[in-house]
Length: 156
Image 1 (cartoon, one colour):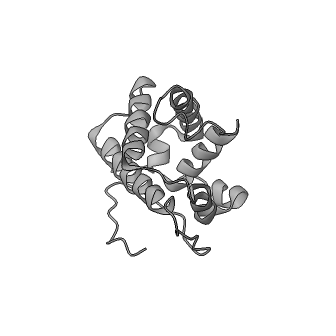
Image 2 (cartoon, one colour):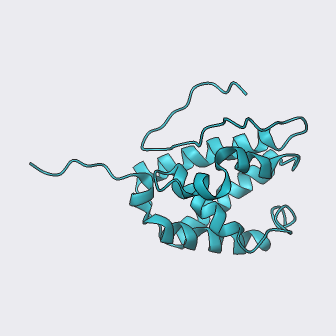
């Protein structure tokens, strides 16, 4: 009988090495983008690696972001009062996906559908958490994304 084990999205895309390549190249593009460059003008040199570790955990990899960087509440804190716009969000998602194409990351429909779903969900949450009055829920669980995920209605 053939092995029916389904890999995580993290495994499918190539693990932390692939995510590090993606985020390093992506943030090189971001620095040169007229809309996103100013948002990330003061980004630390470690930022791409931190985002790679965050995405790794979300996509089914090790829980290193939670262990080393404070989990989802810490990610939310990084977005507070940034006043991100939908235009910036759309550019961020589009540029990340273009970078994934540039680096020849998996482009099969199932993987890209799952990746796009997370990026849309997560980036919209980032916009919400970047507006005035947003607060950090210290008990916010780390999102976990898999093949064909769907979340319930946003409840704040």
